[in-house]
Structure formats: structure tokens, C-alpha cells
Image (cartoon, rainbow, N blue to C red):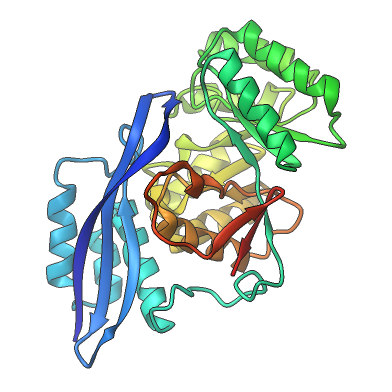
Length: 340
């Protein structure tokens, strides 16, 4: 019989990071560990953790649901996934742990050239919100680190200062040398969004993630239709648990891209649903981690490699942010993520 237990963990950031929802300095969650009675030494591990104020399942009952799963993990897998439909990060942990267990508990979930150490994943360098000097320091560090794509969080400081930062980058690197993505995390108002996008467009911006807050479908549709910069949906995807809901959202908004975060959307099966929708409407996508520990990041990186996405940088470099992360076979070298 399949059995499960959970282990709570607490990760501490090397530096507090500012998001559109405040400053965070730690990340907590659970490791879900699965094993069969007949081979208790073979353990599949998955991560269940949320982002405060963002995850759909950031709820007071979270601990109880993890406990319920551990007590009922012997139930049919399809039933468990259905019971957990409104607990995306727990579904992600269960799905990851089952794949790990199936492959012998070694941390290998998907067999690909990436996991054989033959091919890396191109990733973007992330520049966190902060004051001008802090953001400029991060940008310079990413350039020295050999990144070809950077993503800059905007909306935290004065907009004119943000334009100055981006102009500074473009004075040194044109669009053929460096791709710039921006992420507003919903920081713009609808009234100001298109005006700001117009001013940013002259800097050859690849895309803008979530310019306005999620939930304003009509306004987001208008921005997607009229923006000079391609728009990517991120937070907008959270909470759409069924295929038809996902289809309806993309049909209504028609973004250029969507951002797939497995622990926020319900795991790999949910992401595959979104990819099916993307193929219907010719919408691009890439995969991004959401401050998971190295356990979750390892699972997401392997899933990403299994998709065979070439020529699109992924958002998979957050494991270095913590002082006390779990051991990992992932390493970053000049803007590329390697396994082994």
C-alpha cells in the first residue's frame, strides 16, 4: 500500500526581496514523501508550498489538507487529484512525488537530454524590485554573469527611474545582444497602462507580464489588443481549475504569451491543459518557478526540459536566493541551467 508523510521546511532568503505584495524574507512549506509498504526505502519526494498573498491555496486550512492527503494517499490517484482541485500547490507536490517514486526515488522525474547532462535550459536573469541602486547592481551582475535574457520587475519605484534603468541597459546592449522582459505584477492602473507601455516600447521590450491586476478581463483584453509590447498573462491564470475555464479566458483576452507556474496552477497536468489551449489560439508560453525550494525547482526544470521548448528562455533560476536550500544537481552557468 502507498503511504505518505510530510516534513515542514523553512527557507531563509539571503536578502529580503520586494514584490508587488510586500517584502518577503522566508519561504515555508512541506516536503511530501511517498513510499510503498513493500519497499519503504524507495521514497518519492514532492514540494507543497505557497506564495503568501498570491497562491490560490494560501489558506488557513493548508496544513489540514496536507495532513488529509497523507492519511488518504492510498485512494485512487485520479480521485486525489480531483479532491485537491482547489489546492494547486498540493497537487503539484503529489504529482512530483509520484513521478519521483515511479523512477526509483532518485530525484529523476523526466528522462531527457537535460537530465543526462547533454543539453542546458536557457533561463532569464531576474532583477528584483528595489531602489535604483539595488536594481542597477542586479542588472550589472546579470550582465557579468553572461545572461542573454533578463526579466526586470517594475512598478516598485518611480516610473521615470525605471525608464532610466532600461535606457541605461539599452545604451550598452541592443536587442540583438540582450532580450529584456518586464513584469509589472499588476502594478499599473488601467488608465495609465497603455501610456506607460507606449513609452517602454522604444526600448525593444520582448514582453510585459501582467501589466494590471488579475481579474479585470475586459481591461486586460483591451490592453492586449492595443499594446505596442506583447502582453503575457501570469497571475491572471491562477484560479482557473478546469479546461473550459482556461479556454474561455484565453479566448476572451487573446494574450501574446502565458506564464506557466506549475505550483500555482495545479501541477504538470494543469500546465499541459494550458499548453493545449495555447496551441488552439497560437499563444506562446514559457515556464517559471515561483520561489520553490530546490526540490520543487528540480521538478519544474525537468518538466520544462520534457516540453522541448527551444529558443525561449525559461524562468528557472530562483534556487540561489536562499541561505539554507536543499542539495541540488542544478547549476547555472552563463545564463544556462544544467543538470548533473
